[in-house]
Length: 124
Image (cartoon, rainbow, N blue to C red; front, top):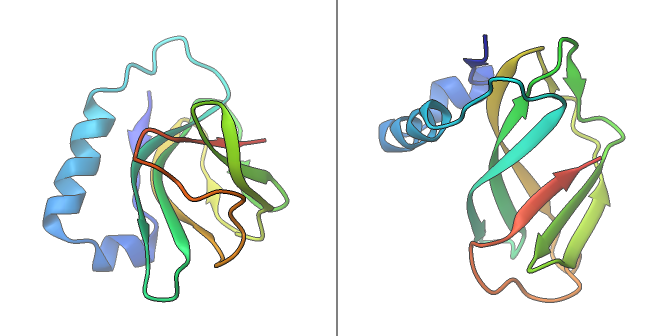
């Protein structure tokens, strides 16, 4: 059975509204019969350093932990790749677990500026 877990720093610092929003998205996911990994887009933003932030709910439907280290992270809108990088995040999502996470695309790493929140994050 899929469970929702917050990484320790998230658990200590997340705003109550954001926690409720993530719990709502998690409750709407039907994990029955799913395999592999999925990233559900929660929101995007630019921070004060002009870095592009993509917050997702990472869903690991497999029976083994999912490591982000060395994975290719791609942000797309309407099928067009806007940015990508090789992950140096050491986060490991346990088996059959969902966890929120924010990916940071450094300033200047996007090929084109994002248009809206209709993009997708692909991890491979």
